[in-house]
Length: 328
Length: 296
Image (cartoon, rainbow over all chains, first blue to last red; front, side, top):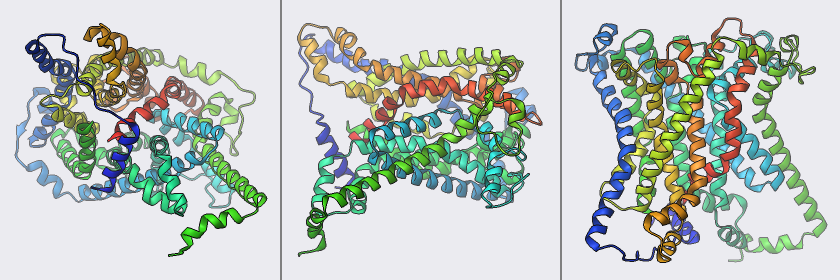
């Protein structure tokens, strides 16, 4: 039995989800069985139709498009021309594409790591705080969580404004660097630093609050038993907190990977909807190819590669979620 | 055998009580100070947005920042709401979000019932689907969605946007509601049925009231998702009178020589409904999310 399974079993035991008593017999058996058989499908049908229609079909369409020449002419005719692997061979021979892939991977790794580290630290802090301070901090985090991305982009643009930005003022006042009249977006490294700050700032609340909710369900007896046995805080964290919370960690990390790998709006809006090539991430590149240059086939091929990379990384997440879905 | 780990608790007892309590006080103070610093850093952008929105023009464009909006003014807000298409944005956002909320609530509740109350062939496949669907990057689907909606003549129409929103709200809504339905003990419904309720009666009188908080949480979640969405609306809705509030706000940003005061006022107005709803619902959503995860 894996450690994580042990942890979750333990929690199941604590939660005390007992087995249901048999249903009282009221209707004739065969009718009841037929109803019982049809009921779940009837209930699921509407949602399944919508999801299949507007997600599964476009997904198929995306793959189909990536094998087609689909420009403005084809858009008007509503029909693409099959060209086999030409789109893929085009992007795979494109030096810019590989630079964009590498940049996207590094960007996602940095953002996910920062989000998870800060999120976990804040969750642990929340658990140790007194009630007043905890409510204050949670409320603050929720406020940040709720801010729409479009709004936060505008606010961060204002904070790093070239002339009147409060960040430039602060850095200059603290004598860290003289940033009077400093443009953060001339150097892509600095531009991405601002975008990373924006994304991590926006993502921390979700991670911290979800992890804290998980921590609150941690059985106290386990921690106390370990402390009686002389474990210090660090050992308690590694040997009890981490294994018990592992499913949540896996889910949060995978979700963060999914979100940070397909970052688009933040880059797009932060750079006034005209990012230079130095700012291309995969989603931006795909969008530019499709909606600016009207090469929808090429854009789709880039998107397909992006989906494949994400799927291979987040395979673990899907497996974990399915396990949860099947066992209760 | 007599390791330090066995000694440790004994040692702790020997520390004089006064010193220990002082140490604990210092520890607590350190924690509170850390929390306060985090709170200030996290909330600063929000504060800066709101305070800029209330400032006079001359207090916004200053080389050393003015920290408090005094005297406060509503000029930025009147400026923002009088800009072209603001009220169109509000109206469109309200239409889109309310439709998405209504439909997603009904569809997700039915599906959640099926997943939580029945074991049936294809259940795992469906669960795989709703989880897999959440992994599909929306940014990748924007291309085929645009092409499909344009051949169905649904571009520049709110209906196209509504249907698209439904699909990315639904999976999460189903997943969350399923957790809430599972949280209602079967015994309660069974007891009602033993007492003479029909299955449907038990559903109406026991399950629905008990799941109501979950329904509220899901509704608000759907509201927030639909209200905050930008990319699909930006691509699908071309004419300014059709655009939603987030698209209106983003259009504001790209104007050369941004007017920060009205922009921050517009940003505050866009964020306000979401923040209110989120504060109202956050505990339930966070716990609903993890309830399923930890239960295993």
